[in-house]
Length: 416
Figure: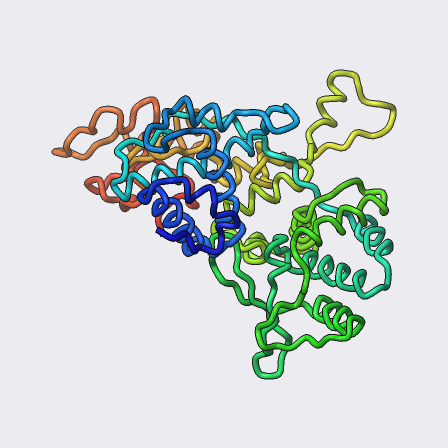
C-alpha cells in the first residue's frame, strides 16, 4: 500500500511495516483528522506512533509492558516525562491499537492495562488591566509588531485558543452590521460569532502596515503560524516583566475580564465555547480568589483581633457562591418552624430529622388535631407522624388524608 497521506512527513518508517499495519496507521490518521478537524492533533498522533513503532519489532506482538516502557520513558535529556506527556503517549498508542481492534487486525489492546498518572492541574492565570497595558506597550509599531498586537487584542476580546485565533477567518457582515469571524474549535465544531470592533480595527491596521488587504471572503486574517505567535508572545511578556506566559493566559484573561464586567455564567460559557456550564463554573472558580468573610468573629473569640473594629459578616460564602445561612433567615424561610436541619427528600416523602416541636400555641393546637382521629378512620402508618415528624409528600394535597390536616410545613415548600 502506498502511503500518500499528507500527515506522514517521513514515509520511510511506515514503509517498513506490513500492509495491514500500514492501513491501520493511515486509517487512524484519516479518521482522527475527520473527527477532530484538527491537523495538529493528527500530526501529534503520527509522531508519537512513529516513535513507539521504532522501539518494537512487531506491532501485533506488543505487550502492556512495551507500552508502559514507552509511555514512561525519559526524554532525550534524561528527564522523566510529565503526566501530560505520558497521557499523550498513551492516548496515541491506545488509539492505534483500539483502531486495530475495531478493524479486526488484533484481538486485545495492550494499552488498556497501563494506568495513567495523576494529572497536575495547572493554576490558571489571568492578567490584570495594568499587566495588559504593559504587555501591549512593549510591542513595536512595525508591521510584524502590529500583526502580533492584532493577534493579542483578538485573543483578549474573543477568548479563543492559540490555534483558533491564528486560523481565524473573517466573514462578510450580515446586513451591513459588524464583521464576523469563523473558527474551527476544539473537537472539530465550527463557530461563527461577531468580531469585536477593536479587534477588527487592529486587524485592518496590521494589514495596512504590511501592504496587504483583508477581505471578508473567508480567508485567514493572520498570515502567521501558531508557533511563531507563541514565540513572539513569550518574548513580549518577558520584556514587560510578566515572565514567560503562554497563549492560554490570554484566554484566562478574557474569561476573567468578562466576568468582572458583569457577564453571566452563560455569557462566559458561550464566549469560551464550553459545552457545559459546569466546565465554565470550574474554570472561573480556579481563576477567582475565594473570599473568606467569616474570620472576623473567630479572630475576636480567640483574642487574635487587633484594636480596630472587626467585620461581622451577615452571610457565609461557599464554593457555590454567596448564600444566606444565618439562623434568623433560616427560620423565616421555614415560616417559624424551628428545625435543626432543613427538609430532605426520602422517596415520596419529605422528612425533617431531629426536629423540635413548635413551641407556639398554634403548634400545640396542630398536634392535638393530629391525635384526634375521626371515628372509623384508619390508623396512621408507622412513622408517618412519629418522633421524626415525617411529613406527607409535597405533591399531595394537605387535606388528602381522610379530611385530616397534616403537620404544618413551610408554605414555600408546598406544591403550588
